[in-house]
Image (cartoon, rainbow, N blue to C red; front, side, top):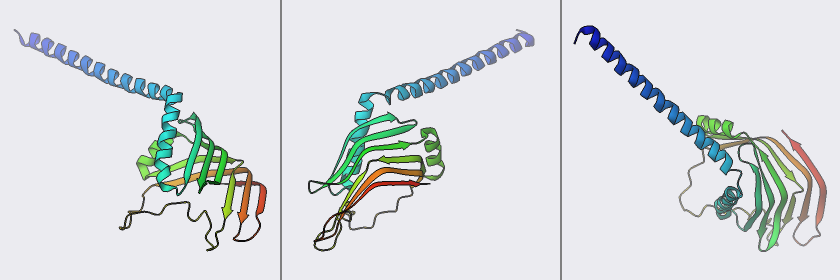
Length: 196
């Protein structure tokens, strides 16, 4: 075999190797895109929303000194989520009741922000018709003070490195009941707040 024949054989092998590598890269990119599309479709199903609701309640419930209920979740995880009938009860009585909580976000930006700086940024949180019921017991402690469980371990917990930023907070038609120990209830109604 001449040197020209060896050159042609080697360049053909190089061309086949490049073609194989290109095929592998295109296949991997295609599979990743297919997985992202499949995940996008799955997150819009009732099964996913039920699973997300169950996971959220299981995660938050141990922190709450009371009972947390959430009727359902709607919306898109990619752009914004709505929580329906969020209620926190303590000793059988409602403490917090919010018929509609809407959270708007950009999930792709969230992922890059979290990877860069361990921070999450929420565009907007809207609380529609929230009710907060504050009651003081005879020892002058408010029910809200006992709503969050303190850590049970004897060693101090490591501080969280996660930061949460909320760009806009909107409260529309809020209702606040305040009952000091041994006194009558004061009500604040049609409370609206817009914060940025």
